[in-house]
Image (tube, rainbow, N blue to C red):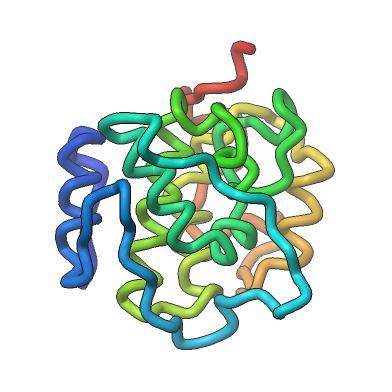
Length: 184
């Protein structure tokens, strides 16, 4: 199922993403994701930081935290394109939900909800990474790639065409105009 989220307001997009899956539950008790097709779970020895309790938020923030809590091992393998890698020293999307940053950032919230939806649709991590990169990299507010962004590009699980390292069809940084963190 392909969903084009661009014309939808954030709240409506969140409802579509979370209710389009048959395993939908309230944000306070997210349903566990179905096992994804390939490499979406962390090794048993990998300990990830805990996501803040979604119950302390409301609306899209609660849904973003619930999504991150449902699939932390996937969020840990995604890059957040809001600029928090520079402003908050984050290295991946999960970092946004281990503190209060994700409460105010629609980019973080949307990325986590997309990750949950795709995991429930049993998409492999490479497909999730590619979808997030193609749909959110144009929102990255900086012209230069940060060390965290460069590291992510070197370990992501899909290959790109072209010399820039950006997913095919994705705009390079600084062109999106929609940010939450660049002004901090």
